[in-house]
Amino acid sequence: MEPKGLIFDIQSFSVHDGPGCRTNVFLEGCPLKCRWCANPESWGSKKHIMFAENVCKYDKGCRACENICPSDSIVWSSEGKPSITWEICKDCETFECTAICPNNVFKQCVREMTVGELMQILRRDFNNWGSEGGVTFTGGDPMMQQEFLLAALKECKRWHIHTAIETEAYASEKHFLEVMKYIDFAFIDVKHMDSEAHRWGTGVGNEKILSNIEALIQSGWEGRLVLRQPTIAGYNDSDENARALIGFMQKNGLYEINLLEFHRLGQTKWEQLGKNYEYSDHGDMSEEAMLHLQELYLDEGIACYVGEDTPF
Image (cartoon, rainbow, N blue to C red; front, side, top):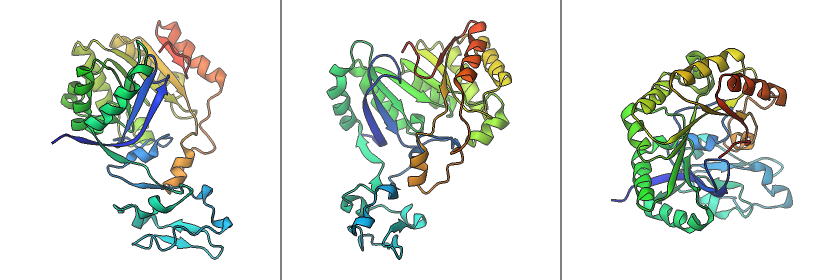
């Protein structure tokens, strides 16, 4: 039987997620739970909904979703404003509300797709990529869907499609190295060099991530690897952390890193999932602070790209 994957988005014409123009495939599932995550809808392992109450037209008299939920999750305030009961919604498998709302207040944010269905989309986009482009598997972390990811990568190779991945490399070494055999270009995130600080920010330590990076280098993998760090004031923006990461890179013969500046583009997603976003008022990096960190890497002979100012 053809493997199926859970996908929460597919974006064509991306120019910041690997060489050339690319199609980004966002796979559901992530072993990390970063406090600042821009895609918290990826944390699950099944289909689920988001509730965008800020676009609801209840004040115009809309009650399209009234009595539509068989589990009575939707409740109404005295002003006629709907809200949902997340404890009920998290177990939903039918999503009646997403089919009835004319304003897309209720959104099913994960869909099931076969490898063949995905390849139809990639082959449709093929002529848009140019000579350097291709597909980037991202998420979440695509390593969480090993069977589907491997099948999709093998099919990409059959069609001579350039493959890239965005991952935290938090997987078994065997699984990680097997996937990487079919990857031409990789971004691997290193959120923090101190394991306890990494655990505080993401829910897991960094030992497995660093070990997998070292195993990849030692395996003779011939792809291009760029480390990345989402840079967050007060968390991983210290000179000490930068120097520890520089030492790790030099030890392993790595010479490229992309420092990503913290942003809040995912805040509304947290709210639509009924989650509290704790970075709503802190974490911002100044341009001066980003350039200072960049200089630390450049002084050690490491190519350091800030934000979207990259050669890929």
